[in-house]
Picture 1 (cartoon, rainbow, N blue to C red):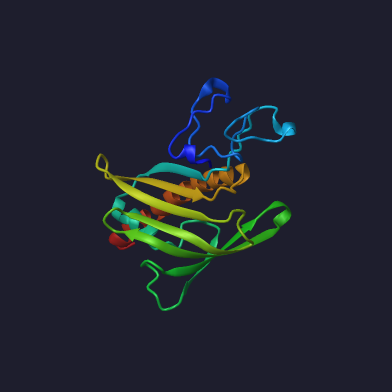
Picture 2 (cartoon, rainbow, N blue to C red):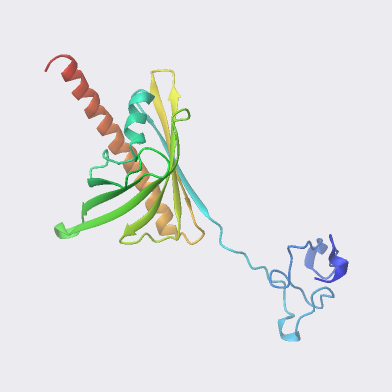
Length: 216
């Protein structure tokens, strides 16, 4: 940029006469006959603003009608055994799977039209875990078939609901800026399906504990 643009300069040729800051470079904004950023004649037609894609976040929440200690015990394992399509979970390496850096390979099996079976294998790594805040953050480091984004960071967090001794759960995903609308919508509905599966799983476990307590 010219030396005169050390901090801020006024570009009177830009429509609405708003000030140009250092972030407005020739590749981001230009206008006809601009003295700051002269352009070839064939480009002097109208202001052009180029916007880079932004990352996306998907967050869903639900209330689980069970104590936070019981729900956290299920979530902390990060094995997703409450999901009906999880068929196998394998712990990798000598690292404690329930600490930061722990990796597990999760196998999912689902059936589509005409009984066609789809198998998905994902390696999941724990990035952060807090027993105080009842939260866990993880990353999918490998997937077969591959996921449709460069990166996705997931966080599940629980909060205690004192009235009724229940649990508020939030599940969020931060996607890289290449996430399509299809990926975002799919993530939303998978979370909602996951909450329904978790509720059913917790209810089943509570009934089982009740039967065991009564010697049944």
